Image (cartoon, rainbow, N blue to C red; front, top):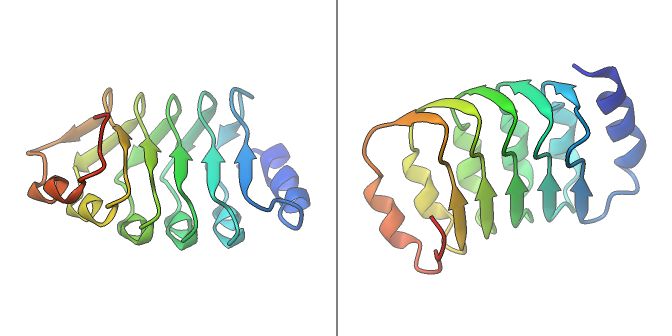
Length: 140
């Protein structure tokens, strides 16, 4: 894990109320699972870095999260099942990563979603029928 990111998040956790953006900072290593304890977080922007590894399942604890931008990183593995709990998501971006596996059925839980960016990943298989639950989706 990038030591700077770990220290930075440890410092910010008590102060971060609703939005955290680390856009384009060339941060590397995995996302620290500790981000999942910032229960007031509504927006998390980690786009355009060098982050990698698996997405931490603890992000699924962020029940208030409406915007999750993880694009243009080096993430691998699958989207954790815990992300199915992110029922306030309006914008989810993971394009330009190496995530794999099937597009999860639980995206149907994200009924407030207006934008879903998944292009440029290694995800495969049919689009789940649960996508029909996304009545607010305008950008796919």
